[in-house]
Image (tube, rainbow, N blue to C red; front, side, top):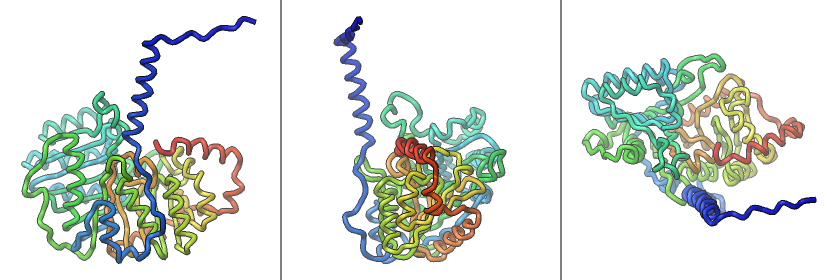
Length: 426
């Protein structure tokens, strides 16, 4: 039997391999951060600790805000109507933007505003909006709109390309803001071939909280465009518009847990009575999963609603998330799978006192990688409305029962574990 000896690597080959390994390590190190957690569960009710919740998430509670919920396709009509009345500036930031009827509505409103002298700044994620057609881009440019893309593929973005701008923000004249889950595609406007119109919620905001949303837009705009917008209309003097306290969460410090991750973990830790979560991509890290289990074990009524595997656009996330079901169910968490279509709203409510609305999924990509935004609201009427929406959606769900779940096949268990291996990138 002939033994073939290994071919020795040349000095150049060893150097190249070493360089690649070092580059991989550097990129990993740049995206790694400290995990979020607390040694003991927080004491006190979330309503009485509003400034603590906001402060620990790099925000400030402002009072006198008006918060209105916008559901479904009505979002586009409200946004277009508001854009028609813009007098100074329109700032739009989005992740997913594709050509179609929804795009035509928004594009037309933006172009008309720009042509009458409104400063229009648009920031779209380079990957999520890669399907935005050249004709739409040209139309926006010809009308004078200032369009930029976040982290496009180029060598200078090599270490940051995986960091996506997942925020959905619209700020008009520095006075009115829209924050939520709506993207600019027809799936949010009307029924499609495969799914009925997606189910989503955004918030229309007025008052001092709009300045916080404007700051979030400015953060990524400056990175993409390098130009500050120093105008008197961009940030307004606070004027009371309603009775809601609100704070904005969006900071993602290098090496530290993101503020949206801290927000969710503290809110869950402060819960005393009930938690309601509606989220399309439920894949918490071990710390988040533990926080939910601890809440349920201390008597909190924890209910989570996610789209069914047959109603999601990311079945691999659904399968990965299912790998966590059994331990959550054993702790007393109730899980509901929404059947009719993609449930895309990113909502969390706690104890009827506080709610979070925004772009953040309950997964590692949103918590650790993407740029996100959540608006926390202290307003019992708004929280009650969201809790009512959860209850109204429940009949369209199948509740996952522990005893039935334990009977799933060995193949299903293996599939869950395989998909969970990639949980940080989903």
